[in-house]
Structure formats: C-alpha cells, structure tokens
Image (cartoon, helix red, strand yellow):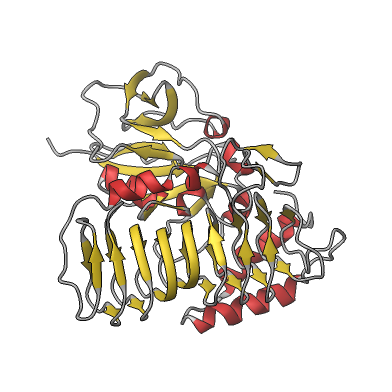
Length: 415
C-alpha cells in the first residue's frame, strides 16, 4: 500500500510571543540555535520541508530565502481534501529541539497522537481524515480529544535566553562528527578537534584554529583574515567574513561580517560587526549594523545573575553571563556601550549621550527615554537600501511584512 503524503507544520506557542526582540519580526523557527535554524533542525528530524509555519497574525507576509509560508495561528486551517491515500499532518512546536540523531517515525497505531517530550506537549500527529487542532490549541498545546500519546526524544526551549545559555553545548554536539580538511599554508591548529573548510573558503596566513573545546566548520565562501583566532565550537555560514580578532564559541549564519572580540554569540545572519569592540553572550538578528567600537557587558560587577530587560520590566534569567539581544534591522552609533541584559527592539537606532536603557522599544529613533519613532517610510526605505547592498530586493512583500511589524509595534493596527 502506498504511504500517505505527510505535511509538516510548525507552530509558535503563545509563550513565544514574549521572546523579545525577535518575536516581533520573525517566526521562532527562523531563529538560530547551534549550527542551524530551529526550522532546519526540525526538517532534518522529520526528513521533509515545512509546508507552513503557524505564527503571529502580523507575520503572514514574512519572507526570507528558504522560509515556508506563514499562516496566522489564530486562523482555522483548511482541512485536506478527503481522498484515498491523501494527507497525514504532523504539527511540531518551533521551540522543540530533537535529540541528536533522533528521527521521526510514523506511529504504528491508528488515530491522532499527542506528541510529548519530557511530559510536555510538543505537537500532534493527525492521520488522514482526522481534524486539525483548533486555533486555541496552538496557543497552548494540551491533550487532544480521542488521541493517544507518543513520546519524542528531545527538549523544549523555555525562554528566549535559553538560545544563548544552551547554545555552546548544542553547537559542540552539532559539530562533533564529520570530515576534516587540510589546514591552509601558514595557519596553525591547537587541539584535536576537526576543522572543516567548505568549497571556496579562503584563510590567510597567521590564522589560529583552537579546537581543544570543539570543532570548527566554515561554510562555502567564508573568508578569514590574517590575525584571527578561531576557538571552537564555531560555525560560520556561507559568505561570512571573519575580519580579525578573537572568536570563541560562535554560531554565525550566512553573510555575517564580524571583527573584534566575540564570545559565545549567535548571529542569525546578514549582519555587520565589522569593527573592533566586544560582543559577548549576545544574539543578533538579521540586518544588524553595529558601529565601530560598539561594546556590550555580559557580566555584572557583583557576578550575580543577570536580569533581562523587556517592555513590562526586567525578568530574572538565572544566567551569570548574558549580554544583549538585538533585533532585526537595528543600527548602533560609533562607541555605543550596551549594559548586561539589554534588549534592543527591531528597527531601533541607538545613538545619544547616555548609556542605552535595558529595554529599547522597536523602531526607536535614539535611545533616550522619550525617543520618537523611526518614521515608517524612512525605515522601509533604509531597509531596502541595506538589503540591496547584499544583493537582495525589498519587494512589495518584504515591505508589507516589515511595515506590518512597524504597525503592530507602534499600535497603528491590531494584530
């Protein structure tokens, strides 16, 4: 008998709406963790591409290369046409991280299945003919009517800062196996971990690869300038440039241009930190540009746990080291100093005479307490210019997506 077609859907639970600053502009499956986006990790687990992501209503126009369509989490899903051998549906939470090497296996028992991991719901299996969960279920997954229960091996990310706190271990596991490459002439390796250089990688003489604490993988077209010290675990996505400095435990997506001292950081991709300055225990969205000597603190003077800023006040993280979370399309002025636990909303421009507060609202023009909004049309025009510098076009859909984010953040439209 021919197997049914399986459609994979990801969904953002309601609690991820508080994953500032990234939840405003992107579904959580498009966040980087280890050497992959969360979506890519789940696609590998299931063995197929995501059909659609169920997320916040204002993100339905979200568009990035490789990302699936976005469906509002609040909308009823259309049921597949009823026909023999039709469609089975697999729904997975975008914050579910499968265990290393785990793979999805179709349930042998009939009927719908609630998928759990460590006792917490992480998704649902709906065979052909079954009804999809109602919209409220995706906000807070729970037991389905007349369903069984199936345990999946893995874990759930509970808070946005878990992406930073748990990234070193995840990245080390992701890079633990695979091929190694010969070192380029004039470079040096410390330790026994592997160094893999994909096609088109260029490494200038004088670069040091330190693999005592993890392996290093540089994807196609990465450029590493002389004087850089790369300490694993470290992954740099296609077309990235490591322009000099000390890099330790870095997970960088495509087209990341980085320089200076960078420690235990995630860069989703297409962002610029091309000058000196320290960035530690931090996460950058896409299309961020940090001015020369922009520096963040990632450790309090009393070595106590860091409280993270947010729109409703500071929250305890339990982490002794936590720098900053910087949303998509943020820009900082030369010499900007960022405190521990700072959250910078998407589209904000950091400049001013005072140190930025620990919460900068999205699309703020300056970081003074009463900073005005970055004008909508000016923001969209600047975003189009920035994308064009990396060979991408801000077409009508991209402008619709970013404009809807501006509208939602600034209260111009409900969502």
